[in-house]
Each structure stands twice: as C-alpha cells, then as structure tokens.
Amino acid sequence: MAYRYKRVLLKLSGEALIGDAGYGIDPKVLDSLARQIKTVTDSGVQVAIVVGGGNIFRGLAASAKGMDRAQADYIGMLATVMNALALQDAMEKHKVFTRVMSAIGMQDIAEPYIRRRAIRHMEKGRVVIFAAGTGNPYFTTDTTAALRALEIHAECIMKATKVDGVYDADPELVPDAKRFDELAYIDVLNRGLKVMDSTAISLAMDNDLPIIVFNMDTEGNIAAALRGEAVGTIVRGGTS
Image 1 (cartoon, rainbow, N blue to C red):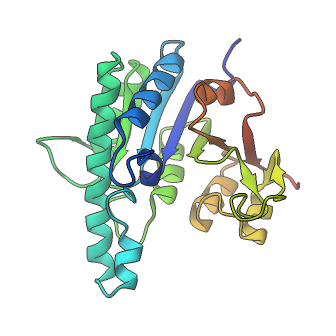
Image 2 (image 1 turned 60 degrees about the vertical axis):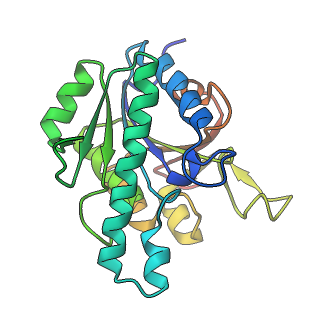
C-alpha cells in the first residue's frame, strides 16, 4: 500500500526513549524505532526527527526548583543532543544513513542547522535528526518540531507517544476516557488537551500542518500511520 505522506517530521519526547530502563535511554526502544524508520525510508519516505531531552534533564522542572530558566533550558538542549547521537547510532546499525543537525554549534559531533542543507540530506534519503531545540531558551521541542516541519516543507508531524491517540482525560487515571479519532486545532487549544504546547498547535493551525498522534510502542505503527490507517488521532483544520 502506498504511503500518504512523502516527507514527514517525527517528534519524539525524551521520555519515550526510557522504555523499561526507568531513566536515560533504553537500547530496545532505539532498536524498535530504527527498524520502523528503516521500513518507511526504504520505501522512499523522507524522515526528519526532533527529539526531546526529558529522559535526561527537564529545564522547566529545574527552573521550578530555583535554577535560572535560560540556564536550565540550555542544559536541556544538551540532553537532546545526547539523545540524537544515540538515535543516530541505532539507525546506522540498521543501515539507515543519518545526519545530526544541532541548533547550538558543536561541530565535532553534529552539523550546524542549515535549512537548505537539511532538505538536501532528506532528498538524498538520509534521516535528519534535529537536536538542541531552536537554540533558544523558553521554546519547547514541541515548538521546535512545528517550526522545523514548516521549514523543511514536511507534510505532517508524527507525534510519537505512549498512548494510542488523544483522550479527553488521562486514560491511565480515567478508565472510561474518550479517545478522539480526529480533532480540530482550535478544539485542542480550547479544551487544553495535551497534544503539543499551544505555540506548536498555533503554528500548525496557521499553516494547515496536520499532526498525527500515535503509540510508538506498537511495532509497525509509524508505517501504518503514514498509510493513513486509524492508529491514533489526527489533528487538522475544521471542527470536531
């Protein structure tokens, strides 16, 4: 079956990489992600990734405990670079060629983020991993994902989570929580649903960029979501 999208941006939270490890990075999670990404890139889908750093350091949490917010955010950006390098290693073990591009200069381990170069890498079949957020404090990796997706002309954002879509309440706390198959951007904002932060949702809404929220723990879900199968929740224009 053909894939619905040709170029996509995959948003991974740092917490998604923890798996069963409890902290840090679970190699089994990286291996599963690498296999799933290889499946779609081998079929010609161009993939970019934005990864968070919450499995190592959360700037907002540190700020709440008294650390300067900007300083805390810079430390969090460095955590995303660590995750990006781990992802690169896992994917290249599966013969998926990758490039890590950092918004903070660190030329010994990553390329600087240059929009046109990122697009050229993807056109050549390489997976591009965007690290260090936007390079600015006070901006989340959700906002980075929306910004980078627009810059590289991605056709959708794929938001990988630990649940199978967006619910009206936390399904782990509320057993009868309702899952949405489709949502409008404005409804996500008005209801305060935890899809992505409000800046990211507003960017997507203003530019009509769909967001697919799906469970990354189910093997094959990345390919299924790209084929348009009902494996999660899609957020786009209109009203729900």
